Image (cartoon, rainbow, N blue to C red; front, top):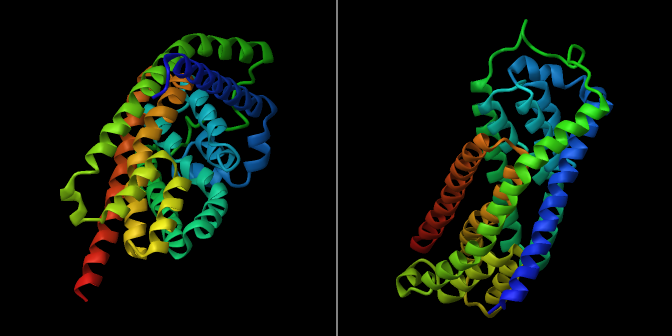
Length: 315
């Protein structure tokens, strides 16, 4: 049990990290706009995406997201605040940034997964990659459906109004004054409530009826995965080593734990950050579509693995 003093100290540290992330992301986004780096780097590619209906700011953000998705999100936030893109484009454009950012981390993820859990870790890492790619395709299709093929009214890199450094600083400070108090509040709320929800969920996982789906060792993997993916992989490796579960059950347990953990991570990490950089009217749409696209594919991947296990057990 964490003491009230320890909880407050941890909360303040987490709030400071959140604040630093928000300020850094907005600053990098404004720096990218001011220096024209995106225009120069992506000039050959962005017009092609624009012809498909993807706004140049969103296309640039996708490329920037390979390095840091948060700076890409700040770029989209600014385009939305300036009225360059619609609410739907801002929503789906922001959600599309997860896949480019994930590609950068995936090599490290698969190496850790294989190193800890062997074949089960490898399959788990590939399922995550395929699921992330499918979500990206789904979101891009939604993004293209929103878009008007931009022609006469399309604001290009060349035509866009040049904004001075002082005005950029002023508008960034205005955004921070409006958004930071809300970001602090929602982050503190979820920081306090999510661990409690995780404990309730973990207690529910001890129900005997669930042992028909996975053995007790499998649910131990699920509970460990809620805390952190490395903990889940380590727990899976231990259960595999003792022969308590097989590779298929380990993958299923890792996926179930990943889904449960992703929901709590969304509330802890994404919501506070979104409130910090986006106008408040956009956040409910971001949360709704994030959960809809993520949870749908997570459930689908779990069902496929479970059905495969059932088929193999009857075979």
